Length: 156
Image (tube, rainbow, N blue to C red; front, side, top):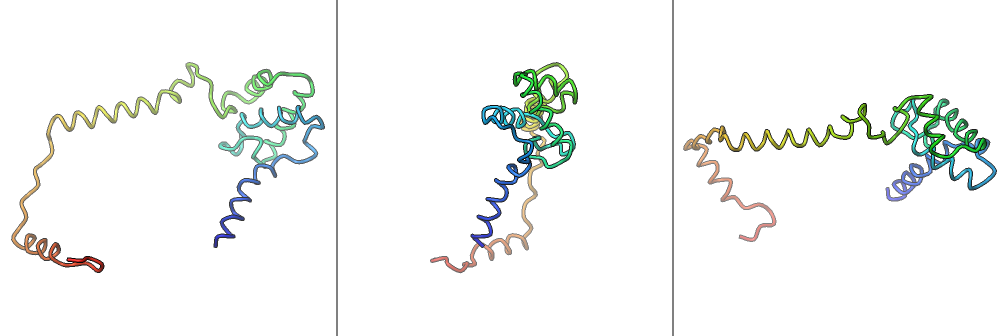
């Protein structure tokens, strides 16, 4: 079982490395490193929650090739990302930019947390909680029997 888990872990880690095909890779290691860095910031538009570096989808391969073409043409990382956003929209960014159209993405979780806190505090302050009904005689007997029973491993 332990060997299976180790093998599964290795396959999960190596899965991303299998997406980039050798024929896509640039000959210059520095340029290839830049391509991988940029590719890890871009979302596959088909897989949605994978980077184009990890995805095996055909569109992700096309996007990786496009990134490498832009690097070879001399574009900076920022220029490449701006080009991809212009071509595919803001959705292609794994980490969306902070702007008016993405404000809800950035502030939504905080607003929900604050709203939840307000609801909890208001409920506690109002004291709407109903008091628990007293136990019936049968329930008291059952409770006494349960608490007097010893469980295996107890040393009473």
